[in-house]
Length: 197
Image (tube, rainbow, N blue to C red; front, side):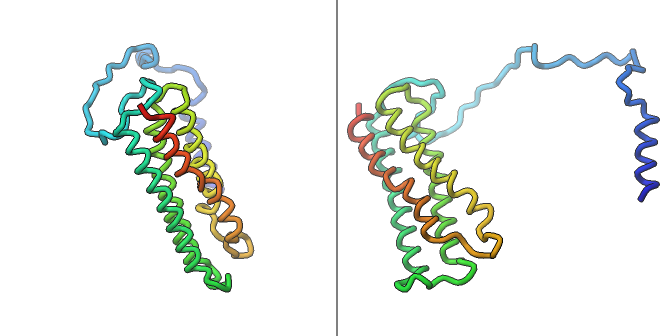
């Protein structure tokens, strides 16, 4: 093993990596930082219900986008109801119905996490093109709650079992879920009042 390290050091020493330019005939390549780059715009098909502009254009949404906000709120609410139903099935009336690895709760948690990740994507698509104002702020508040859920939930996605091989308690999981419970109502309120044209 020592001879491999020694051989590697010898190759590095003999290769002349001292920073001097022994080959003046090779010109240094120019950097691309100072040169303008031509960007070719491509047209992609996108969901018509989502704003496509990156620059803030309006303080309100179109009626179609308002319906999309309500639809996304329904999806988030359905995900939360699904979580509650699946958690009740896993835990059971005694509260001790799951196995040691909490595979039933883990599956329900993974599904809720994935659904909130999708919700975050759609909320970002709705918030980005809006200028600052009541509509932007109310949707940004909903987005912040979903982001808060994902921030609290990510450690459980990375490491489900702790050092003693115990899953997170349902109390801990429910406290993370409670962060996102008001989101559907906030979104519906935004669609009906602050964001309507």
